[in-house]
Amino acid sequence: MGIYLYKLPDIGEGVVEAEITAWHVSVGDTVSEEDPIADAMTDKATIELTAPVDGVIKSIACEEGDMLAVGGVLVELEVEGEGHAPAAEPEADPVVAETPQPEPERTPLSTAGVGQSAAAPLAPPVKIERKVSQGKVLASPAIRKRAEALNIDLASVPTAHERLTHADLDAYLLSSIANPSTSPNPGAASILPDREASGSAAPATPKAQGSSVASDPLPGETRQKVIGLRRVIATRMQEAKRNIPHFTYVEEIDMTALEAMRKRMNANSGEDKPKLTVLPLLIRALSVTLDDWPQFNARYMDQEGYVSRFADLNLGIATQTDGGLIVPVVQKANSLSIWQLAEEIARLAEAARTNTLATTDLEGATTTLTSLGPLGGIVTTPVINRPEVAIFGPNKIREKLVLEAGEVFARKVMNFSISCDHRVIDGYDAAKMMQDLKARLEDPRSIFIL
Image 1 (cartoon, rainbow, N blue to C red):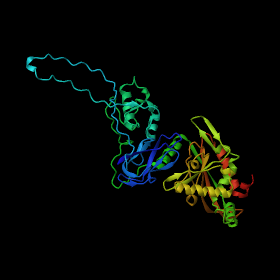
Image 2: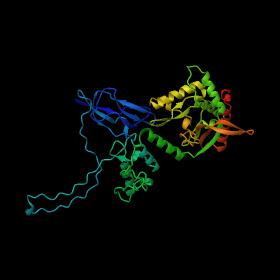
Image 3: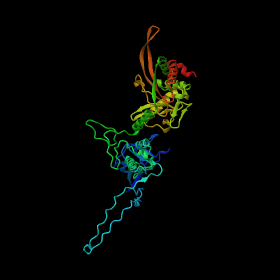
């Protein structure tokens, strides 16, 4: 029997690490080639990792939610034959800069001491070798964010591990406090987030609040680890709210004529056509309107200092799945017919629910539409998908009594929300654009007249 080391493969596109979001095996399980082992999530997609050989799982690399570097051992498998795990090589003694020690005093020997050994000086304390990372630094998003807040170059932080840890960052900061003149980043030495620090290199004491050390659960408390897609959503929403000054504008739209037209189109369509929902019609109206308002079909690259506007409407459609919110993209929505839009929306929704979206299905959005359909509520204030500058939120269509020329009529109305990045979009423009969209939806024939 031998050991086969299955390493996290190179996923490509510059990915250097992935989050292990789910394990499909446990230690002791027997697997066959191509059996699922784990799910790994990158910034771009979730991939299923399968067994490369038949064998028995002897060890797994980490827990769900942990990050693993590309090339790191994912699992060890016991296999028939010799396997391919390399023999352990003796490690070279680490080269550690020694602090010069004073020479011990020499004690004269007497005849009374013959046959007795002189007292040996105390051995210096064992030192942990810490090396500065070479090339790409492996660290979790939390550590990278903390280092960015402190203006610390992670490449200058020594570590004894494959990946930087919070302990490495603490040691670096404490060293900066103790030796501010030798620190490459003395400005960071005065701050230790989520940790107490004194002027010495004593161990830090966690704060009662904001500490990374978890307390014991309270009676009746259930905890669920924030990993995978939920962690990505949390991070992106936090970044969006921190960086974008949102404002939301809401307009009430009479959908009576559009709903009547939709029902006629469904009644007159052949069996080869999908059933129309209101969403393809909304997208059609939006694409026609944004031809006149390109500043809403845009991205604000705030770090680079420019706004990108796009001729094509690549529309992100926020889709709820069991794992969380995913935003697949309808590519070139402005060039598709109503029926093509319906087919593409249905395809993307099914792929999102079954976790079969391709990478290209998730890339290139220029703006986003989010809708909960019949559960859409009366008013929404959606959060912008950074670096986009706007997000559209149709709400629930509802019956409403309307007074017209002294008579009361029942109408179907819908509130339509838009959240905008106030750094690049003015409230006046948002109101004017929404009036144009309202006019097209209330006279739906106009969305087919270009």
